[in-house]
Length: 449
Image (cartoon, rainbow, N blue to C red; front, side, top):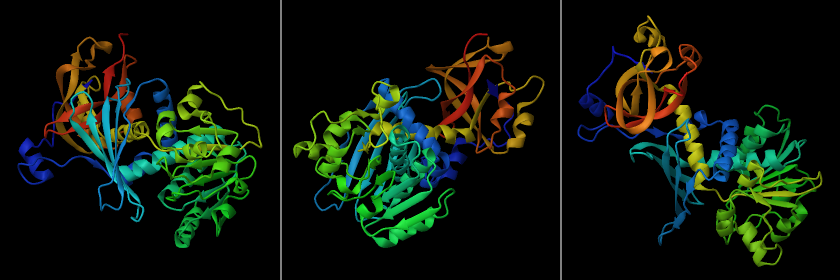
């Protein structure tokens, strides 16, 4: 509902294209790095995104195709392709994500790749996002959600089995939902265990950190055990796990690999997976235990969608052992990416109409700094909105001209104060004058007063 008619830094399309790279090739794709993901998706927000994923799946609002894995002869790792679609939910635009993730056990980090994000209404590319950072955050967040749902409320000690990127992320996830004070660590390479121990000692609330010689020694007596290894064979058995422990296992992602032994799976009083369909093909910890006769074919108690939606409940007793097994899904990636794009859009304000009666828009917004660019929004401009302000009805084939304030630290509370009850802020796709598409924050007419 804003339009800025005076733009102080309006460059031509040619100038913008030249600034972005070699003339004739246009501007570079908007890329969100691992540092961007860490900044825009802190762990408490990632756990919230995991819960949102579960609800989205439970309500059938996500298209998540089965992933495919590729390992050409001579390539020392595997590359997976994982597509997903999220419809417009009234707050964020529809997106289609394609994750290309490489799992190379001997590399550091062992998981690399990118997630391509497209506007699901036009196919226009919106961004690429560092896949390793998203994978680390959303995988650990799923485990964090399982800890919140299944671990004893008084859980204070965490064992981290595997001290790589996921080990650190899982420690953060456990700390996001429980008051963790004790950390026990094992890693195949002792130096990495010591490095994680040094990191853990700097974290608020952590009082005791120990490094152990074996996985079983690290897990002994822990309230929460997070298994984050690349091992294709079991690293923990039933004798390593104490009564009342919650175990998360995320490292094995194929039907013929596992981190937990069959007898440990059989000892579990509840087994929860991230997604039933994906687990039925890829959760080796479950599938191999079934094949060996340690579990029945219906041993899985629930998946996260069933627990979060309330379709299934787990009546946890204090001495029960609970297991969460994750193989990862494209739905988890898509929802995490949408949270990242939503946070990133906070630095871009699409302006159309009038911001405040009697005030020039450039004067109102000048304190925020940044630069201006031209753009269009897909939708229809409404001239009968709140107190005569023009509003925007998103969607459709029309194009509404806007000016976009870029890279600004916007005080949304201050800007929101100019708006009436007939409007609400949401995120939409803006097509920039240089041909790129970006997710921006703007205001739409939410209902006739």
